[in-house]
Each structure stands twice: as C-alpha cells, then as structure tokens.
Image (cartoon, rainbow, N blue to C red; front, side, top):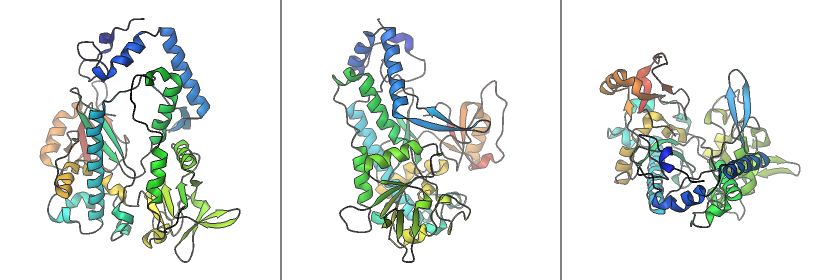
Length: 412
C-alpha cells in the first residue's frame, strides 16, 4: 500500500512526521517508508496485537462518572510513534530542568523569606487566595531543599512546531508508568521500527527514581526502606502505584499499613513486626495525608506523619505544600521566576495566558471568550475547564475574576 501522506495533513496544525509538502520529515523518513510498505490488513493486525498486549499486561486507568461511578478502561495506544530529534529533545530537557529548579526555589522561598513577593515580582494576593498553600509547611527545610522531586509538565506545539509548557503538575504527578509500558508494547508490535533509529532508552526510569528516593533517606544506611503510599485499588492511578513499587522493589502501602511512634518515626506493620520506613513516595493529596493536621475524617492518611516529616525522621516525596506552585495562575509567573531566581532566560515558553484578576485581561477575555479556553485557577489538569463553541450556550463562571485563561488549541 502506498500512503499519500499529504491527505493526512490538517490545516493549522503542526505535523511531526510530515512536511507541508507532503514529504516525510528527515527524522521520520525511515518510519514513513516502513509504514508505507504495510497493507491495511497488516496495520490492523499490529493494532489488534497492541490492544491484546495491553489487555494481557493489565494496563488500565479509571474514569469517574457521575452516572456510572468508576469504570476501568483499557489504556488507549497509538501504534504510530512520535519522533523527536535529539537536538530538539536536548532543548526540551534543558528547559524542563531549568523550570523545575526555579519552581523548587519558588516553593522554598514561599515557605521562608517570600522575597519574590517582597520585591513585587509575584502578587501577594495570589498566595493569599491559593488553596494549595499550606501554613503547616512554613519554615520546614526538606532534604537538599527540594520540595518537588517528581514533576510532570505537559507540553504542546503550536502550528509552527514551537514547544510550549502548558502546565506543571507538582502535587501528585502521575502517568509515567503508561509511558514506560507504551515503549514495551511498541517493541512487541513493531520491533522493526527500532532497527533504523538510535532511540533514547527509558527502561532505567524506575532505577533512577529509586536512586533519587534513596538519596533522600534521613538515615545513612545502605538499603533505606522506601514505600509507595497509595489510596488503594479504587484510585484511577492504582496501576501506576503498583507498577512503580514492583519495579523499584519498594513496599506498596496504604495509610493503615503505617504508624508513627512517640519518637516521631514512621513504621510499617508487617507479619514479622514493625519495620521503620525512611522515604515515602506519596500518591495521596495533602489534605488526606495526616488526620492530626489536615482532614480529621481522612481514611487514607497516617496520624502524625507531618510530625515525623518535620522532625526529619522520614522524607515525603513530593513534599507537602509543593502544590502551591501547581496552580494555573502561578503558572503564568514561572518565566519571571526563572529570571528572578536563576538570572536566566526561559528556554521553554509558556502558552500565552490571560489572568482575569487584571482588568485589561478580564476585558479582553469577556470580548473574546468564544476563542479561548477557560481554566479555574486552583484546579488540577482539565477539571473545571470551559470551552465555548458556536453550538454551546455561553455559560459564564460565577467568579470569572479568579480564573486563568489560555488560548483555544493549547490542549495536551
């Protein structure tokens, strides 16, 4: 079968594999040539094989619905890979490192001197209105001064191919296990694709994650005890929690499996007795983490875990309070953070963002809302997002002055 690549081009979108002329990009020439030699039947067989592999490996995620409750869905997988040249990825990598370094400095500053506010670079009102700021974390010094050990930043391209950061996930970022399993599935289904490309490996991610967590141990021992704290089997990312724990050789625990003693040390309950835990890779939100400090009705946390963390007897990753930088309004100030803390120019740009707390931005938004994506300031991911189409009624938010606005098309 000969594929007419030009037929698949969409006006106004950047195609990562094909040039506007219809010819494959240089980095995708071998891939396009290989795919063009496959028949429709062969492509369907490869797709069916990928779905079977995903099913047999148990790769799933949970979708929550008001009408149907929680539903386990098989992970969707596109058998056509995305190819990034090394020189482009090197730029992205450098930009992400720069970004997470500045974000960590911002979080540390916010819970200590707040110099970025005192010097008028970051608005004090934004911090006052933040539901992710934790007063309980003020003055705490986590190991190595790092608050967000794992960061998930969403990237998008514009029609010119420029890569932008859409948002930063610093509270409880998830999704990396699906990326790792995607690579495994692709190797099963299209092993030939790997013959003509020198592909950057990803299979050492869990080893690097383990080494990162182990380096945070408050005790100088050879094999620190690491635990992955999960809300349980009904959580949408439970597959990932179990996967990462298994790959790292860490313990997968729930809040009821842990306890804090009178010396503010954390112990895991085992059939052989109590075992001290050094590092907890937590996958539950701050407000459910400790019944003594946050929600007293939480069924997920460990009473006293904040005491143990503040005493330096256990390390929590990500640290409580890191979510103060995981905010749609704070996002708009990250380029200024990079300039302020690092004295550098941002290597990766933000998506153009209008903040409705400013009258000029608010007026622009009200006049152009049909061409914008509206996101609530303190929500995570795509929750509460509003997109107005020609057919949809205009649903005005109750407190639009608290919302962050991004152009339509800037979606992951």
